[in-house]
Amino acid sequence: MIKNLIYTFSTIANPYKVLGINKGASIQEIKQAYYKLAQLYHPDKNNAKDAAKMFTQVNNAYEILSDENKKRMYDTCGVQEDNEQDFEEELRGNANGYQQKVRRKQSKGKYYSKFHQAEYETIFSEFDLFFQQKHGKKKAYYAKKKGDDIKLGLKLSFRDSVFGGKHQLSYRRQKTCETCKGSRCAPGKSGQKCFSCGGSGWLFYVDGGSSMEVKCNNCDGWGKVVRDPCLVCEGSGIVEKEFDIEIELPKGIQNGTIIRQSRYGHASKYSGEPGDLLIEVEVEEDNSLRRDGNNIISELELSVSEMVLGCKKQIQTIWGALEISIPGAQQPRTKLQIPQYGIQYGQSQWKKGDHIVILNLEIPQQLNERTKQLYYELLKQL
Ligand SMILES: [Zn+2]
Ligand SMILES: [Zn+2]
Image (cartoon, rainbow, N blue to C red; front, side, top):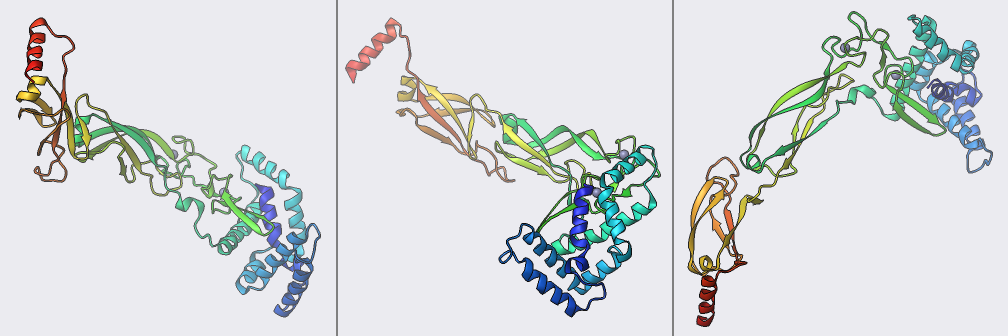
């Protein structure tokens, strides 16, 4: 972490040095120095190993010094010329030692030295700002982090899917800790600005001409570090709780439908919006009824004589038992359509699909003598 920051810092910290000019140099002198060095290190002309890296540094330096605002920012918040050497050496030489020192001091419950805190905070927050401008990133990491979504499965009986209605669900959900109100700190305490990222939650890696930003691992993107954590949430700012919700399912909800309940997901760890609750509906199959759009389909077994002569039969629909008259002379797999006995769609009770009965011919497996005789007579007849 420290190493990367030093790299960032040293890559952009010495534009005067990189261009080999004094701090008071005029814009003309800056330009001249830049053109000279840019030509010298241009990767097309210079095959040396470090040429590309030097070329990038020269460009970065020129970008700062040729822009009035960036130059002013660097001049005011950058390292002073007279102590530049010492400070850089301290950063480089003590990178590990410093980290250890901070850790050691933290473990004793003390704060790290005011000097370091001030230096780091000023320099890195200003440079973060600089990078944010350079890379067009204005938002802090935590500012755009909403809570995680929660995905739940909901098994519905065929009947419940047809008629919809209210359903109770229980699930575990991360909520903002009520004790610390999400501040993660013990009562009366507050978080300290993270010295690694200057409070932005981002770390910037600069390597030659390319740069990359990642979540700050020192503060986990929060921008603050907690010295005295809230004991209830153990410094996380969130607690997990059982949560009940009542949802209203529409009539005729389909298998695989995903219902989104906005803001019923996990709380954000970064004071952002909560995530959403996503409920995926799984409709169980029914033994005798199945669905085709808003129509309900069932099958009915009829004997040869019932098929030929017609009959009355009781069938099960989603609206209850129904007696139907089947006329004679039916062909197997004929579909009988019973209007208004399907799934209701829309508000009006008249907007319903149909119930479709498929007629199947049932051939007897075993015949007694009498029946056999009748079939023989039938056979002669036809
Ligand atoms: Zn708490
Ligand atoms: Zn941080």
